[in-house]
Image (cartoon, rainbow, N blue to C red; front, side, top):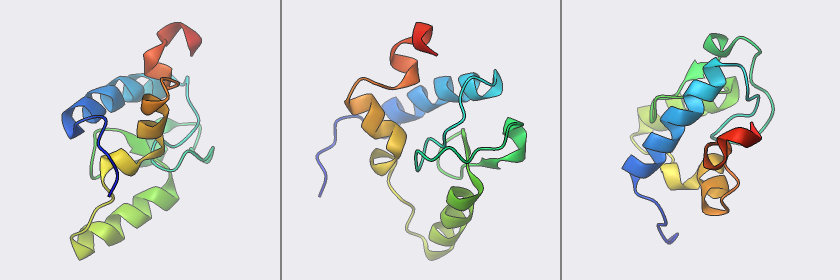
Length: 97
């Protein structure tokens, strides 16, 4: 089991800031998997079922399957949470967008 560094509320708050950056068009990677497969128009991506943020199509489909099975991927396993742990998340330093 992974040691928890951040609570789900802390992760969701950081992801809410990340979503603002997504809407501004500043970010092109998926916060869930870390891949650069986001569509250029952010609203053409998938809205996550776990947090109020956009994810790529692959992660959106995977979330739907996990939701159907009743076992979503915990937020602390998301790529973005790893960036938060290393203090390299875009929301850690807004000037570094």
